[in-house]
Image 1 (cartoon, rainbow, N blue to C red):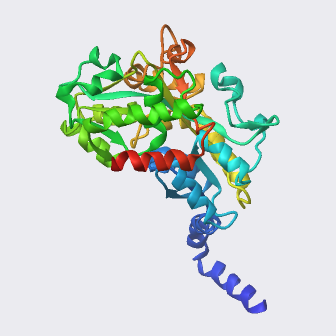
Image 2: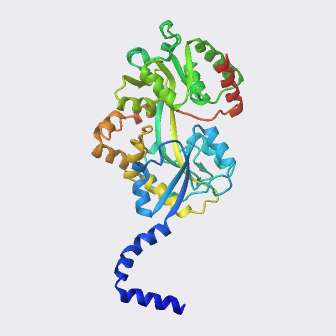
Image 3: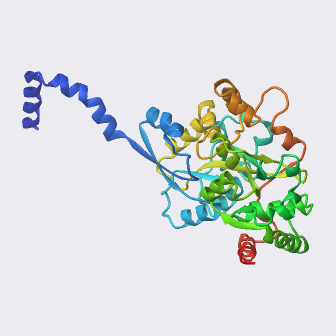
Length: 370
């Protein structure tokens, strides 16, 4: 200790202390920087999204990306408790996370639910016995996405357009059973497209098989973008502006139409992982993402855009990026995207109610191999 004190006095006398003091804050910041781990779909940890939070809280966000809810559950199940501080999940999978005891209970007072549009304030599957386990972050609609050179908006007003002879071998499908079977269920007239008795579920599978000869292939995210952009496929059911919005930014002549049979809503939500050692920081991150700045960042996510559930988020988007607000139909005056929900034209994408996830996945594998 005496040697340390002597060395420090010598440093001060030498005049080098000024440089040391100036350097010290950056050294302390580097040493004190925390890490927040996140299990998420792609794009949500991009610098333009999380950068302001990282800078404000001296934290580095380390993301593990997945594709699809089944993969997310598998990834979480294979990881020790506390591996992930924040989980971004499709809303229908929150129930699976809750039932497996993978997520922490949240305090509703921490989040701006008063600013949420009424439809989203107590969202299905996020609350259990009045306990909150996930916060609704963003959403979009799924319908019929199409290349306008091949299918007009008026033709796309019916999913039946996919069965046209000129579209044989020109229909693509995103490789996931929920949106595809959900869409077929809408076509078959099921008011609750994921709550099917045995006869209705059999009918959906049989109806899907009649579309199979029209299908060129099954695509992941990147393949979907490429196939629609190039015109390799003319139509894809069960996807939406999260794909065509990206392509429109690049000038592609594509659109998503909600047909007369209705559409589906996808929703993504944020939770805190069970056993997280950074729950205070995870809570602040979710609060940041629900702030107007965070809402605008997620609405304009480069990987795939979305609508957001807060009035303040809509207001800031209209102020800072009115063209995107108009493109996504997030208008605070006059008609807007919420009218589709209020008119009953949009059904939530859910997990199957009367069948298991495994049975739907097995049926999807059989369908692809047909």
